[in-house]
Image 1 (cartoon, rainbow, N blue to C red):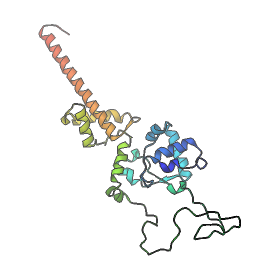
Image 2: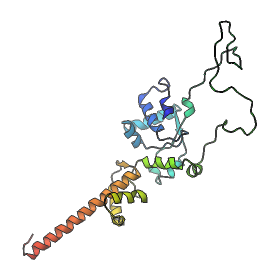
Image 3: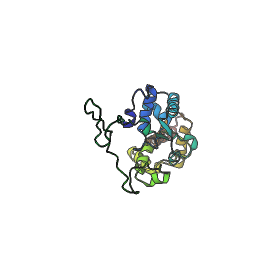
Image 4: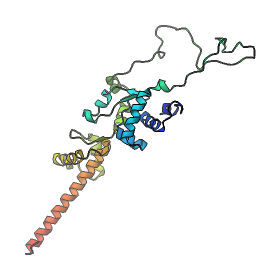
Length: 256
């Protein structure tokens, strides 16, 4: 996000596009890669409509601020292709500030100008250039993009998991709730794990699959599932109580 904040206003004048870029950068890794929030998530973050968000993403891509990244990252977390958002990489070099150029006649060692009107300091930003010490000089060449297996097995695995925790999506029939999250929500709701039956789970899925405009994260859906089960339990208890009440009246010869 620091990179996006540092972009000069003259380089990106459209305030809506700048806002979308700022929010998108919040989901990228430290190297600017792997941002895949949905249009709905960016809509909530920016306050813009989903249609406007998509238009601004297209504008940012055409202007060279973002490019499509490794789509396999989103596929690793979202099975359904029609539910996967586009993975974007930020073009960090696009917004980098250029170092000042040396004027003609400047001394290569001191950075001072040899003009007659005095000494003018004109050293370039960074250390002075030095000859290559050896073939094995690390950190000076741009590293190639990492593939998905390296990302998952490497130190960025935790960052990707935290990104997925924030990823919002509409409910789909193949959704499997994370065991740790749903167990925690059931305990907080005062329910036992056995309360989650196959029948109740299918009922929950059927209800929310029919409402594609509702988006939530994995944790949010687990919270909704626990709330659903608690409500179903309360309804069942009320029906039992009502049935017992009718039986008592019937025993007394009263027709209801």
